[in-house]
Amino acid sequence: MNGSPRDDVIARGRRTVVRRKRMADATDEYTWRRDEELAHFDASNPTRIPFPDYQRNWSFDMRFTDTAGRSFAVEEETGRHIGNIMYYNNDAARQEAEIGISIGRRDCWAQGYGSDAVAALVAYLFRTTELRRLYLHTLDWNERAYRSFQKAGFAQCGTSWRNGKTFLVMEVRREWMSAPPAERGVPA
Image (cartoon, rainbow, N blue to C red; front, side):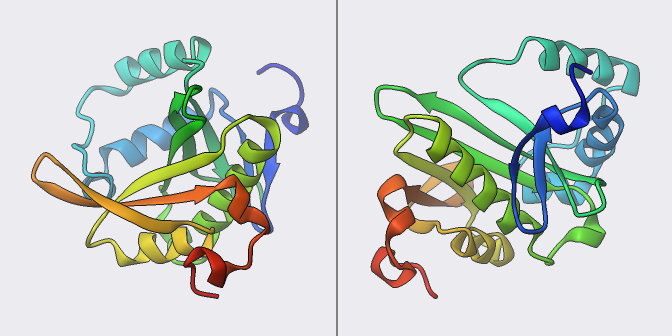
């Protein structure tokens, strides 16, 4: 690990810390990537590769991260790694990027950690980059995720389809950050 754990923190929410990933995170992530239910919420397939192969790939990805996006760990109040959050598809010309989050620990679901981490990452990106718009895709049946993203300031702006699944597209814009929720179509 480079620097101290304090140097790893990129954003703080009220209940979460968003930090750079550490090699020790690979074990948690492997467990979460193998989980059938988490894969279902992520519209993906669970990983089936052995842990040593996963760890080798994970280590390579961690060292040679694509500058068009970054993946971070999410910790709760006690410092426990509970999930991951990322931004990707960074389009400098359009000044926008896509974000995604997964809370891997079931005992942390439906407790506000996701919306807190998303709001912290949004504030960080708008403060430190030229991005003007952040967007995401969430499965149309995932009401809990939809409400969580609304709570973090996102509003629905469309739908998309991929691999036979319908996704709600949600966005948040830099200029909305100073507007009251009702003026941007977000319930108070």
